[in-house]
Image (cartoon, rainbow, N blue to C red; front, top):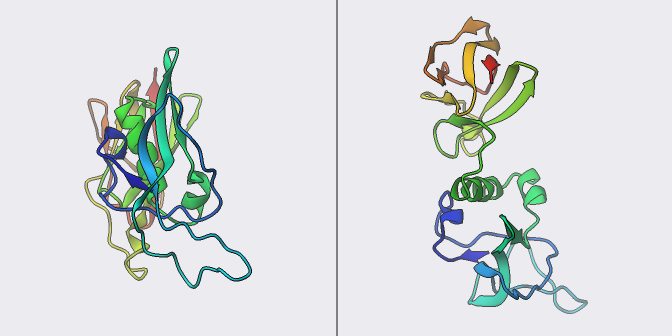
Amino acid sequence: MRFDEHAFFGKLRKTDYVIDGDFLKVRARDAEVLARVAEPVGVESRDNYIGWHSLPPGGRAEWPCVTVVRRGKGTAVYCVAPLGQLGQDGLWWPAALIQGIAAAQQVSCGFRLEGPEGASEATFFRKGDVLIVHVLNQSVRNNRGAVVPLRDCRICCERATPKAARTVYPVQESLAIEGRTITLPPVEIHTVVEVDIQA
């Protein structure tokens, strides 16, 4: 994938991204093309096969990779890359692309984690008036397994007011709340936080 300057790609480095696997060659009718497939695209056959790794990128092809178009009151974004599969395979950039799209479209689930870019991530699960946040330290992935604690992580509640917050793993302790922001202790590998909220 080779992209143009656009707010959707605000969390990605300016480079080409691998979209291994099968994808459709699509034609954009009325959609704006924000990224295209970067050649070469290897087609495997009996006498043409791809070796150990991806081929180096060549020129930009005319096949759209990411498009956007307005539909009624909404916006439709299309990507030929299998983002879920690539993320499951351990690539970080599909999540960064989705975060960039959400930020550009001002889409929010009401909660977000602020922390070191590329190293901190979280999942959020609301159970009644309790928000469960699982914070992950991803710095171990490219650091030969060495754990570098993440500092300066915060949970920001954009639509709800936190009444109380505490870590429940790896230790149990109350957390300070300032306005709608909860400051976390250093995150080693992962931390589980519970937040009592009121809508």
